[in-house]
Image 1: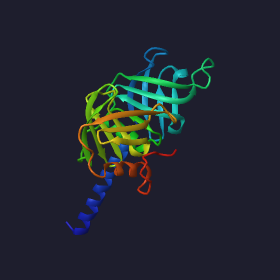
Image 2: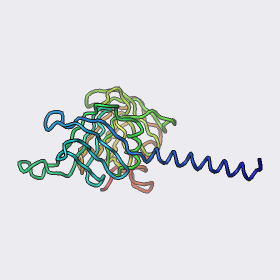
Image 3: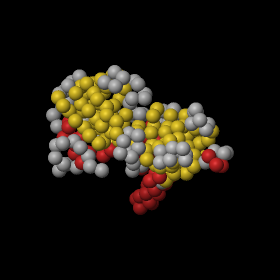
Image 4: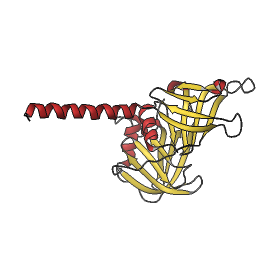
Length: 239
């Protein structure tokens, strides 16, 4: 077999592999759900595509399609619960109040692949309470206690993401640094992470007791990810 033929065959094989990988990544993610567990219950499928989320159901009036720009926030509250905060008004009784769609996952739980897809594709701030297993070592990892609820876990910085890993599924978080509003350390034993949570400009503060001092330069790494390397050391993000 000539060298040129080998090169051509290898090139074709690599092209096929790339096309297959691309098609897998491009596939929409489908999650079987039950909507609004207390009021207006319905069953269907949430489909996460490249540019939109669709709620497919046999009830035509209840079906929805949102572009990511039409959503205030997507909240993966746990592997079995997803919340959509939208710009829709709730009703004439609560005129101006945003409508929230609460979905209970009844099929396969939300996957780490879907979480990675959302973190990569969705421009709005996310609430992600599903911390994936890491393929690489974090830049730092410190044991902490979250004061709200007293849960124990670790804070980890990996690339452009800050993670709170804990056994309490509702309180675990993955934050993209660019989505954080404020990171502040009043002293070496405490750390406050204020994230956009609730949709729009609403924020939620997570106050941690730090069991071990943060490594040198840790806050600078976080601030650089939030604002860029030239931002002054104040930890606040302008929107």
